[in-house]
Image (cartoon, rainbow, N blue to C red; front, top):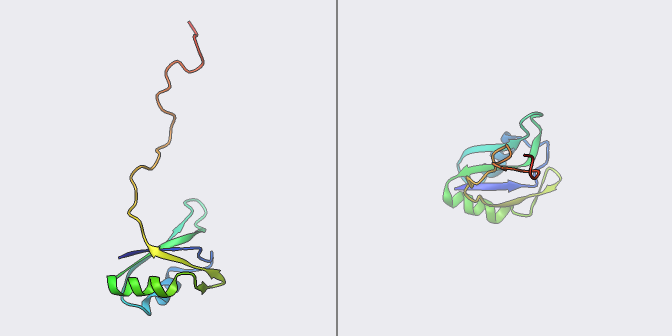
Amino acid sequence: MNIYVGNLSFDASEDNLRELFGAYGEVSSVNIIRHRDSGQSKGFGFVEMDDDGAQKAIDELNETEHMGRQLRVNVAKPRSDNRRSGGGGGGYNRGGDRW
């Protein structure tokens, strides 16, 4: 199961989360989302672990304090492919008649 972990301390690391969630079951992967340019944490991430351990971790860790922040922990929603791509889009004759 994929778990969303929000309101993370900007100092939290993948190892911190692996240890925290590892108390509830086997952790398959940990990914803290970071800004592309700076590498700074965006304050949220994802933990993947077995279903039984995941549900227990969600129940026990949601709204608890970790590294000075109150965590938001829940089942991750599937990623939407509706992400906007860059660029302007097909605006013909934008600015009125120019003939």
